[in-house]
Length: 540
Image (cartoon, rainbow, N blue to C red; front, side, top):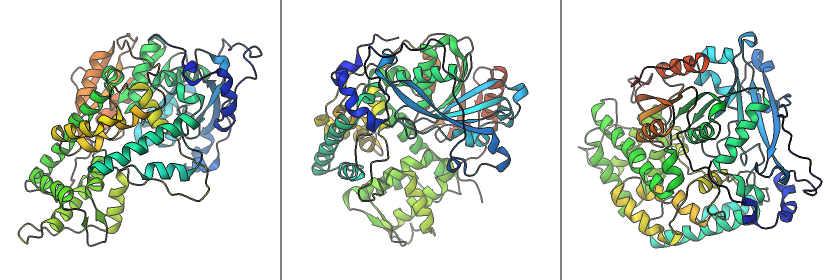
């Protein structure tokens, strides 16, 4: 474990906690002298009924299998007397309680993704026997959604003002300046309203929460499936608690070592070897597949389209939708997560290309419905906030809180135009777009030099950790999965010849391997390669 500093000191005197905890849902003792010592034996989770609105879509016969709970964990695990935060949990009980193996904890990634309702999706992710043998448990990590949330704003109006001044893809000096100012304001709001939880949002904190939950449901060892950022949580857990890991499945892997040592380089590699590499292969596959509407030197066509959007301006399609550079890049990045949408994306790109190059020879008979346009735009991050006047801020800011705690960024906000220019030269389609993500957010974040777990990563578990990595994963490139397999003390990597982000639920091969591992701790052979059930551009 890394050497820890006293994080509460970074936020001022402990007495100040009482000022803000009422709004944050933190429970803080009246004084440290009056506080009872932390119990040595785990306090069991007290399961009860779920809010019926959370169970919409569950077959009536399965409703008795669901239960929910809130569970208190220390705000600061090193100083448990400073108060607690609540974690929201949902459980789907195993079908076969007589032959039950234990609990299976789930995390969807993000960071900041809500895992609370993941048990409802179990049948879409796992083989039936996994649902027979395990209680599926989803939870919202600290700072997220139904758990004690990390919120940087008091009102939606303030959030809308700040986020509304951020360009999705800053290009001009004015856009860069306005976005940088908004990011500074975002940091100031978080420093003002984030409260004591702000100092305790690193993955290390969440891993300690997860170990408490493991004990609280009565499991001697953890069985866990994590997706995307959830692989960072899993890797942190097995290195902090290597002897408490039973079966750990990590799908869509990060490079944990690089992530916690150099945030800028991690994100640059994520952009080039992830999004750009995936998109280049999407375009190449498009040329090879007669069912792709954007075929016929797709790489050159997209370069021409991108240049047009940058130098000429937005394109309006016959349905009235307007597409500027930011909207196209944002949508393309989002669709790369979901190969089932590659066909509509290709149709959109061809329609935009036709509109910008109205040559009869180049035109293809491509029509895109208004519903398809709306669906594609929803893949990106275009939708900001649907503001209702005087509505309290109901979102949370856990994404930035976790990333800025875990990932060190040595750049300043004033350096972002130079970094974005450099990335754009190296990564032509997504470099500028992704440079203005975490490398721009975190330099203005109010917590710097957070005390996060930074290794070592090679502590050995009794059972190898099972990893899945897609060759063309945009968000967590395949090389990250290879590095994860080398960095962990005991791991087995299954490679998948697939597009998209993460694979479980999308390949009979991987799903069978995961089920055998979770239930019997059986491993596939070395160098196993799986394939997805459905390829991009399926024939209709």
